[in-house]
Image 1 (cartoon, rainbow, N blue to C red):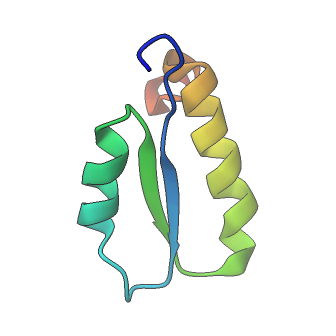
Image 2 (image 1 turned 30 degrees about the vertical axis):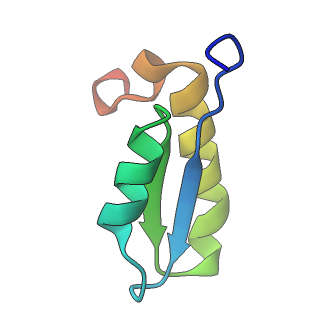
Length: 64
């Protein structure tokens, strides 16, 4: 339903998955996909993806 869009956000843990496929899936919904290699990176990945979804210009590297 275009009036109620849903963004797909995917976080791949490890290197065994297909990040490019996840990125393509997420892109179809204006979502995001990221890969992390350690559980300790999970909270930072969630924070960054949430910030990007709520305020794209705020989360860009140029805003830092």
